[in-house]
Image (cartoon, rainbow, N blue to C red; front, side, top):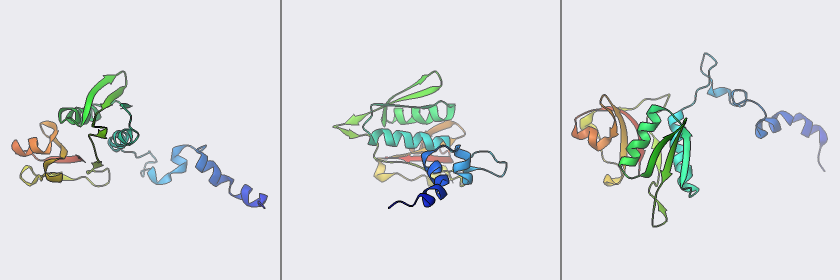
Length: 162
């Protein structure tokens, strides 16, 4: 038998689960000390790419920013995605598969909002025995870890892809 009083007491929980509250009220930990929402758009893009591959999609779209577009172009140049294009205020990313298997096994954000990670050019290591890449933001723009090492440039490690 269902207790009607318990249901009405927990209606706030149900509203939260159903998403009727704005995101700032549902997740107060996402606010900084000024009350502004803190979200990582780069991490959101990387998760969208990963989820697109897991769902076997052929194309995904993410909101446009120059930085995210440059990350997507690095992934395109390294053949992890088929094609990247800007369409209005979106980045259209065509996902590629080889023998039915996704080109990206995993993609991880390294430098986060709360903890930035920097690496000197001489200390850049190979990812997964050379099968993966690092995306690094250097003074000369975004590039792979291997390119940064060859040019003796260090910078912020954005993500690992393999």
